[in-house]
Image (cartoon, rainbow, N blue to C red; front, side, top):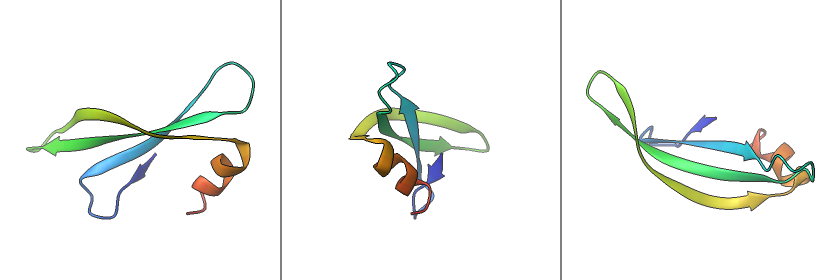
Length: 58
């Protein structure tokens, strides 16, 4: 999981669970009034194994 640069949303990866090494990046805005609450979930893009490994470095 990563916060975006302005701290208003998080990005996270989900495994495809079919053993092919693919992942999907999702993003959700954080609505906060002293609590963290998820907003709309947006599918950003699919990642292969190489992109997955680079995602953690970025």
